[in-house]
Every structure is written in structure tokens, then in C-alpha cells.
Amino acid sequence: MISIAGTARIFFYQGVVDMRKSFEGLSQVVEEAFDEELLSGSYFAFVNRRRDRIKVLYWDVDGLAIWYKRLEKGTFSESQIDKHPMDRKGFLMLLEGITPKKISRRYKIS
Image (cartoon, rainbow, N blue to C red; front, side, top):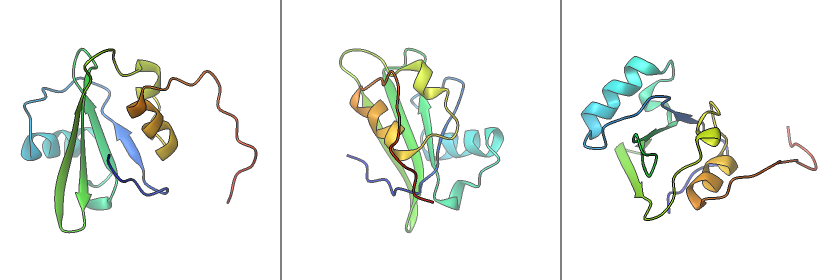
């Protein structure tokens, strides 16, 4: 499982991406599509046309890293992918296949 800090920002590319792209191809997509800096520590997520595969590109301490997941059944929820930027909890629920009807917090730590 991918380890994500609680303050991490997660951005989803709103289009579809060819899953054959690697570091250079995904880096180019990030530079063209996002205002966020690639080396900022943010996570950039990409899905394929069928939404059954996801790649996450992020800057690890000393280089770029890619995390890849392929679903055997089902798809990633389109309604969750549209949230921009996504918080850590929502992203982890997406990866686990949880589609919340309503999320309410008891309190917010500022």
C-alpha cells in the first residue's frame, strides 16, 4: 500500500491516460495539465479509459516514483475522481473501493 502523509495534496488528471506511459510521459502530462509543481511532494493520479487501472506519480525523497494498481473486478468511481484536489482519506477510500454516500466530520482540526 502507498504511504501518504495526512497533509498531502492529491490531484487527478481529468482525462484518460495511456497506461504505457512511464516517468517521462506522465511528467510531461503533469507539467502541461497542472499548475502544481511536479517536485512539490504532491501526488498526481491518472486512470485509463475503463477506469480499472490507476497510476500515481509522486516525488519521493530523492526521485520520482510511480505506484500502479489494476483492479480485477469493478472500476474506480468517477464521482470521486472528479474531486480536485482530493484529500488523503477520500483517496484511500477510492483505492479500497469504498464509495461514500455522505461524509460528515465531527470536527475539523485547524
